[in-house]
Amino acid sequence: MPAFLALLSSLLLLGCTPRAQPLPTDQLQIRINLLCTTCDDFLQCTAAGQSPNSGFTLYRLREKSFFAQIATIWDYLIQWVHRKTSDSRPLTIYEEKDSAPRVLVADSVAKVDMVTGLIMLPDSTIDMRDGNWIVNGESAGVCRTMVRRDGYRWLRSLLNKPLPTETAQ
Amino acid sequence: MALLGLRYLLAIFFAGAAVNKWKQGYITSDYLQGVFLQRIEEIDPESFGAWFIENIGIPHYIPLAWLVCWGETFIAIGLLLGFITRGAAAGAMAMMFAFAIGGYYDASLIVLTLMFLPFVILPTGRWHGLDRSLHARYPQSILFG
Image 1 (cartoon, rainbow over the protein chains, first blue to last red):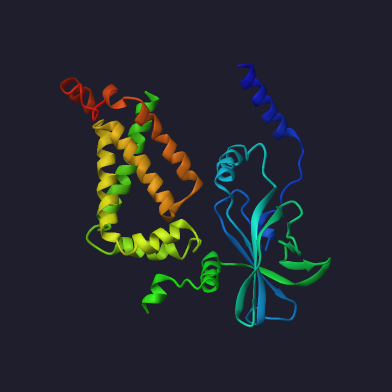
Image 2: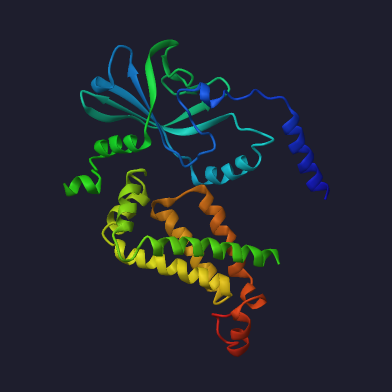
C-alpha cells in the first residue's frame, strides 16, 4: 500500500509539474509519432534550387530496439499525466546523386524535439514546422516526408532487391 | 471469474478473426497471397519478416492459409468451450509469435501474446469448460489438465 501511494503521488506530481508543451501536429509539415517505436520515417532533403530528381539526402529514422518498444507501452499508459515530448531514434543517412543511391552514414542517432519542432541530425537540423533543412546554421534546402512505402521501394533499389511483383514482370 | 471473462473475450476475438477468414475464402482463393504482396511493400526489405514473406509466405500461401484459418477456428473453439484449453492458449501464443516474426510485428502483439499466458499456466478449462469432465474421465491425459 505505501508503495502504491508513493507511485500514485509521484505520478500526480509529474502530471502537475508545468512542462513545455509539444507543438500541435497540425502546425507541422513533418510529423513524427514519438510513441511509434516500430515506425520507419523517411525524410527526403533536397538542396535549395534543386529538384529531387537531380539528387537528395535521405534520412531514415529507423524503428527502435525490442526493449525500447516494450518501454513504449509505459509511455502510452502515462501519456495523460506525462506526455513524451522528445525522443532519440536510430538513424541511417542515404544519398542519391546522378540516380546512384548510396549509404552515407550507416548507424547514427537522430533527436526529435516536439517542443522546439526540430530534428537534430549529425550533419544538419530539420525544422518540422516548415521542412527547412538547416546545415551549419543556414538554410540549405527543404525536407519532406517520404511515404514509407516509397522509402522502402527506394531502399530496395539500393539493395538491388526488387519486389516479388517486379521480378515476375 | 475475471480470468474466465478474459478467456471468453479472447475466444470471441479469435472467433471473429476466424469467421472473417472463412468469409474471405482464405483457403479457397489467393486472398492471403494478396495480403502478403501488399504487406511486403510496407516493411523493411532487410527484416526477417520481409525474407519470410518473400521466401515462405508468398510461395507457400495455401498451406499457411489452412494453418491460420483452422488454427484460429480451433483456438476459438478451445477457449470458448474450455476444451484442451491450455493447448488452445499455447496455440494462440504460438500464432501471435508466428505473426510477429512473419512480418506483422507490432508492440501491441507483445501484450496480446502475454494475455494468453494465464490460460497456459492455470487449468481454467477445469474451472469452467469441457476439460472438467474430460479430466475426470482421463486423469492421465495432459490434454485436459
